Image: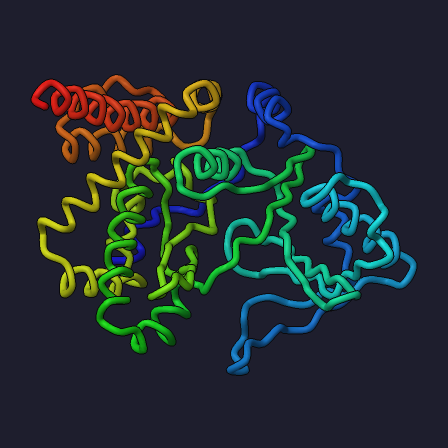
Length: 355
């Protein structure tokens, strides 16, 4: 069944002029000293294994001596642009510990590890080939999710900050069995909300290795959040199930957890809560959202067949015939988010009148 969900390999879509102007306006488009293709010039590599000696599907890259200094300095510069003011004042305290290349997935990113030599603290960022659908995914994550995200784009190169957390597949295998009942109920609640958020904003392919689970220690318990880390499949596939994490076999344990720990009334409540939060974020970010959705409406980030199929699925799912008028994936997403916002405003108005 898994093969039928993802119908084809997603192509890379170029960033058009309108989206470029949007990115420049909101300080996403910044000149950087290194390109994705520059990092492809490694002369050798070794496999990176995890603590269980299993292949991580990443390889550690090595560069010729005459290029390594220039690459290191360029990556330090990128780090300071991403996290600071872009100056070279801190270069002497920074070291590029590793440049890893992922051999799996669509984006084939480079992962750069930067360490502060004064205290050995380190962080990561990613260098990827720029893709319009991924850019839309990142921006909608920034606007519509509870999380903010930091990234830069320059020509055909994308720089993304690292999102810290326990990979979903690792958490399900190693941590979930050790959680107590209270934690499992909370994780089930968060999965319902995450599932709803992905469906509303049409973020696809949220298999367990494409999101992280973030535990946060509160004063009397550990709170959990689920956060997407891969935005490659924003509004491409035509099958609605691709945008609903519950239908991926990799998330089976999470779906079981929801079934066992939550009543139907609680599931409906958490779905309503998430829809309300998305609606509130839409209202508070109206100007930026409108500019972004106009870019997407006038862009090509999928196939005509996928647009037709998704429209049909959404009409059947939501009973909203407005989806039939959509001509692009941008139109479909706008219709979906308008539906969420309209229902939130109507419900709020009704409640205030009854009160």
